[in-house]
Length: 256
Image (cartoon, rainbow, N blue to C red; front, side, top):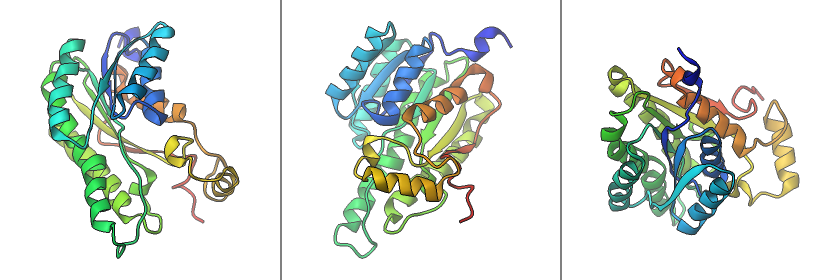
């Protein structure tokens, strides 16, 4: 291994749901490390805002509007990104939604369909669209973002938990499928992280939850998840695949 084995400089990176939260932190971190980043998001204005931040800091990035819930959008945008970047080395499947409802709730069927389409089905679609380009990379990496809800559920969260458990299963299966080609596929399961998705909770409730449930007694930062993602995408991480890694402050390790 050479010194470049711990560098993503000049790598072509696609991040979904990169307009805010963990996706934004991931896109910014990769750009800081010298990668060429496609910042994709359902909200094109958010993507453009992140790109402006990256360029202002001297990084390289382009903004793309991508609706991962729409297969036509995926089939159009992913190859276009690869064409603009001259290939793809890294795909980070970060886009997702959350929602709570009981199994017998009136909106359960609708929520179930949306959860699986956006949180799970979109990930395999993005990977399928990116696969021909990843096969041309010297160190192809796929990182799927799931949740600790894949490892243990919350009340009235069955649709979300099922979608995230599916991401973990998809990751392991694709790691087996692509291992002979040197394409690594890994999954990160964030726990309680300070993002727009958790902004609904009152600060005092977050403090109480973190103290009760995590070993570190705090919520994590999006950047802490981003650094784990970056580590899995280094050329030096070529022997790590099929893993499901909690980034959760010790939440799933806690017994009670």
